[in-house]
Image (cartoon, rainbow, N blue to C red; front, side, top):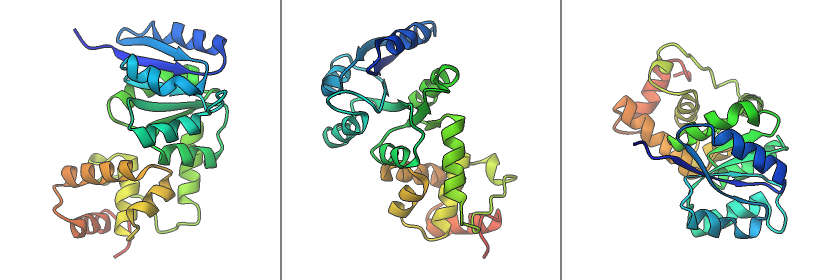
Amino acid sequence: MEEKIRIHLADDHQVLIDGMKTLLNTVENFEVVGFSLDGNTIFEEVTNNKSHILVLDISMPNKDGIEVMKEFSTKGFPCKVIVLSSYDDLKIIKEVMKLGASGYLTKQCAGESIVEAIQFVNNGQEYFCDTVREKIFNTATKDNSKLNKNKSNALALLTEREIEVITLIALEYSGKEISEHLFISSNTVETHRKNIMKKLKAKNTISLVKYAIKNKLIKS
């Protein structure tokens, strides 16, 4: 029998908790194992109930979502985190992703996206709802005419995010600069780099640059 994905919900509104719990428990391999209305005890609770995924609101009493993420970052992540928020502010998105969140959804799109987001994140992928994805993409490509994405041959092997990462590597961005440019953590950048190297069977950065030039991601 397939192991159920154990989910912990954290929001300061009981009505929203109840609604999400009802929705998620209808999915065959999902199990809501706990919830928090207060930020102070989230770390202990997700650790004790062995959650795989935490769905975390930014606006929490006593300790907000960003403070919870900082606690996770300091103590070590007991589970993966999807931020669910009323805010689509890029500054907040950038901060929580750099702290190690695996996904970000606005509450406006949560109903249609939360199930897919949990599945993606549980499988080791990042997830952004359409509103957030569009904002990140527009900001990441603004004033950067060098990012010319050729989606023919490259997309056959790489995801869109991996294409962004390999392009920035080829443009000599450091890991820290890529992290800041794409609003993701340094650990996530390194994971993408390793996945790209594996997919392309590349031995070094020079191989990645050659691939980027060949597929017209950058100019030689």
